[in-house]
Image (cartoon, rainbow, N blue to C red; front, side, top):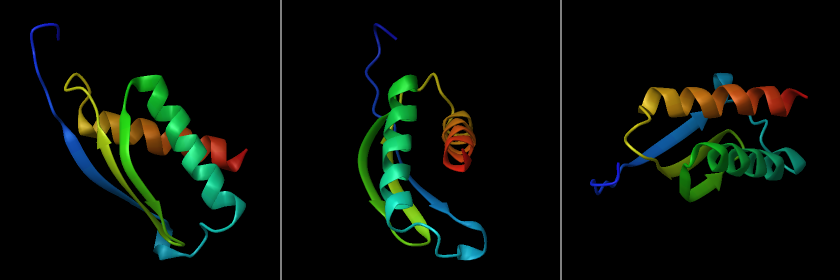
Length: 85
């Protein structure tokens, strides 16, 4: 990675099951904090983030050593655990 320049940006949308409107109030703020914390662990940069009552839009930039499936799986899996605690 020392000799490589890269720019991998992805627009990701997380949607709740059946598009139920569950993301509001304290939960909405907490989800943003959880996403930032998890992305910081893996070196993923959040360029933009918008939370709506039933979905979250994110523009992410991460190194090519991570596949998009691995990065999204990590964020979704760990955030679900933290939200339910």
